[in-house]
Length: 115
Image (cartoon, rainbow, N blue to C red):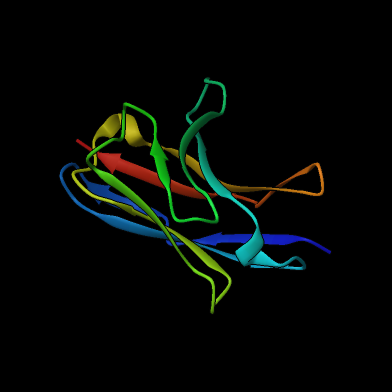
């Protein structure tokens, strides 16, 4: 079955960096676009970044220029490099895949940015 497992979250000072990972299994990873979302306390889940199978990347305006999405198809792993972190980036971060028309989510990883 499809599984997505995020890791790499933690507590960081404003201006710092973190790299999130999402280990994927149960589907042909290289054949699917992948996305990162986040959900801050009391807010709806929001889209952060996407990476298609051709290597094109897309970012929410709030993270453009600071975050980089990438993938290693040999390791079936999706990454999110987050630089110049701000307190408003504090959220649970989720990776997402739509496989054969069904949405799959990981359990999320907490990112907390202290001011």
